[in-house]
Structures are given as C-alpha cells and as structure tokens.
Image 1 (cartoon, rainbow, N blue to C red):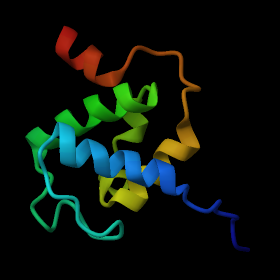
Image 2 (cartoon, helix red, strand yellow; image 1 turned 180 degrees about the vertical axis):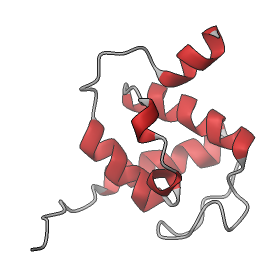
Image 3 (cartoon, rainbow, N blue to C red; image 1 turned 45 degrees about the vertical axis):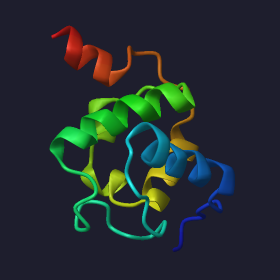
Amino acid sequence: MNEYTPPLEPEVQARIEGILRSRMHLNPPQPQSDLFAAGIIDSLTFIDLLLHLEREFAMKFSLDDLELDHFRSIDHIARLVQSRGDRTTTPPLVAQILAG
C-alpha cells in the first residue's frame, strides 16, 4: 500500500535555498541533489544548517529528526520541515547542544 506524500511547497524550498545562499554563503544545487555527496554540507555546516532551519521555520528538531537522509537534499529538508512545523515543545536541538 502506498502512503500519501503531500506535494512540496515551492515557498519552503525557496526559503531553504535562501538559507544556503544568503546565510551560509553556499551555492544551492538542484533540489534533488545530494548535499553531502556534492560536498556542500559536511559535519560543521550541518550544525549551522540546523540552526538556520530552526530559526527560519520556528521549529525545533529532536534527536529523532537527525537522520542524515532527512537532510540529504533540499527536497528532503523541505519534506521534513513541512511534516514537522512547530509542533514540538522541547528547546531547539542546537540550543541544547550549545548549552552543553
């Protein structure tokens, strides 16, 4: 049985591309391109990306969200953002890590 997947919202994709371009000074690839395989995202820029996503979308990631496949492409990130929204109540993950 196939599970329904809602269409990606172009605005969400554009905002993610904007984060990569203007805040992280990276050249975003095609939305389906693998950000890790292309060398655009590494372990340090991944943390930076999480911080920017949490701020931009007023959302909070949990440890369960940190599957690399969720962040493999702009499309994958957009799906995660669309599915999560701001429904969590825990402090942002990046803030938890920095608070140590």
